[in-house]
Length: 294
Ligand code: 13P
Image (cartoon, rainbow, N blue to C red; front, top):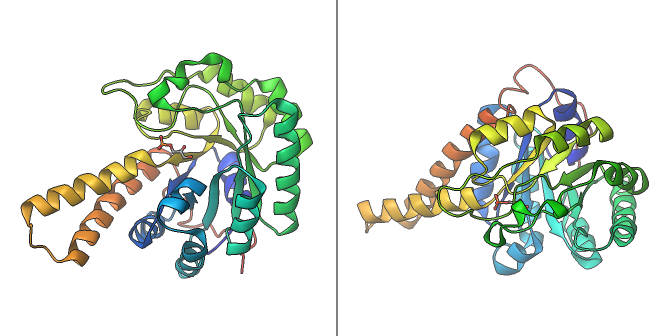
């Protein structure tokens, strides 16, 4: 079923687990994600950023395809604009049929972030869509932004931010970053801050930079209140490695079979991750409670 992130993440918040939000640029990835969710009886979120849309699969093509696939399964699937930067990105995503939008104004001063998020949240809610925002700033692993504690989210400021903007979930900076960390490096997360954020906000919290963060960290982050984990780099890596290995073993392989090999490798990765973060099996006996989108 095709839904917004709102009720899906509230369920995760109330039942202390997290849902994967996986970046996707084509049909093979969309199939891998949705089939994994159905087989695991798990909710899932499909993410795409404006940069990825420019580089590869555009939202006006992907949205109807993902919506069509989502409507054929019985688990909740959301399609979310990841890191929407300006109003044009956001209104286009709404027009294309996304079920959720993220407004990322985390590089702006607090008041400007509030102003931009307020506007997007009210537009999204008016259309029955959900809105994710970011406070503090989750930067890039290549720049070691994960270690810059001045970028981390302040709980009291976050409380004011959420009250004023009415965003449905909040991406927090607690020590992860986007992209690949140096080989062998595992980031150190600020769990005390995360616990305080959860206690203060009592709402769904989002962790960006879910690749390479380490299984123990991920499990503990979920136990301390994370309900949505964004994963991109590791999924793309699994597809690339499977493609290279399959080609090496069989250089004459049919192109469709090559795509399917990558799809199957992505499914193995996604299903394992869903088990780690506790979303697997949630819809074995339970029916989704929120509204479906047309
Ligand atoms: P990674 O590429 O580090 O998994 O981060 C993904 C992300 O946070 C997308 O918003």
